[in-house]
Image 1 (cartoon, rainbow, N blue to C red):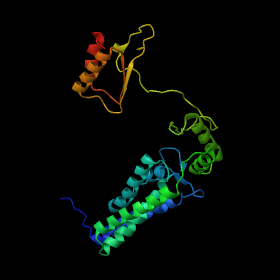
Image 2: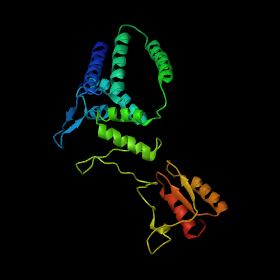
Image 3: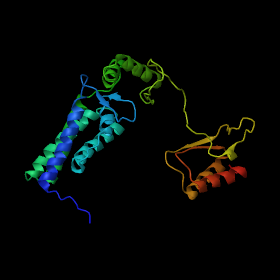
Image 4: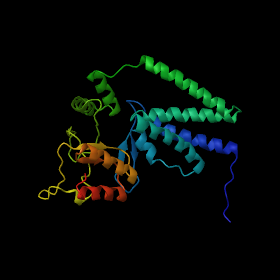
Length: 271
């Protein structure tokens, strides 16, 4: 029979707060333009010198399960901010950790969690309204340069490259930073749309000389959802038959049944 650990409320709250405190302490070291760097090394790869909250928090794992709960709460907030905003992860993690730690202390003292959560919600709305009032649209390159340089850890060269990238692709363009094999930092701009894969089946080839599938004046269906329903595939094909044009589909994935349906109609020259 396995022995289960029995922990009481006071001990659990204390351990969760310790996990929150340890995590926010590490994040606070990297905060701001004068923040310090942290070296991560798991002995199976080269040491990494980083100062962004997402990378740091992703490598930290607490051995104590209850303390890990506090750490996981901060992790969850940071990952959400990184996905939705992309910056300010350390600041958000520290704020969230302190709010949770103080909240646990108040709840332990007898405060009702419902009223505590309602208070946070009201304060959030007040802060958001104030932020909207003092904020302004990002229009000039000087502001973009200041933000880019700050987000790059004070690297002015990288900040200027990011500004040049925004000039080339616009504010709605996609910009990514990758490790270069060279010893210098450079900017590469790719025009148009790039897709990792081409046709999913060789049976769609219509130019056998070049082994390519070529269309002229085709209809294009772009979706970020998988095509798994045969009825939906049939509806797509019926719509295309009415237009009498070739069809190019760009989707996340397609099931075998739907793919076979498209193949049969393509072979029969229906679409």
